[in-house]
Length: 100
Image 1: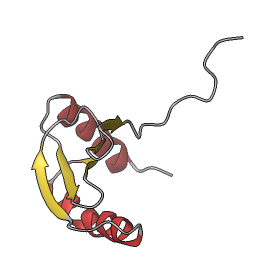
Image 2: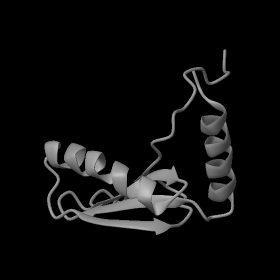
Image 3: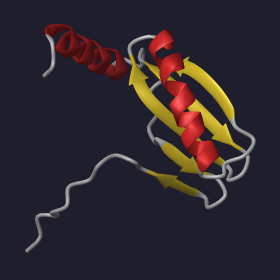
């Protein structure tokens, strides 16, 4: 169950993100050549706490040459696969397309 603070924090994060003031973890890997964005976070401290798990997951998947940066930004794409020349949108998409 969410507390009042959780709801307030979520609202603040959404507001900060819409203004480009939220904090994000940017992870660039050399192999594969990708850029990943994780967030948004209300503070750089929150982002730094979370980044360890993201790095561990990428290492477990075999990523090499990992460079991490915590910064304020508003990424348009959450995963950029430079090796494939693709931008991958990790957002959840609805299962139903509305077409019958």
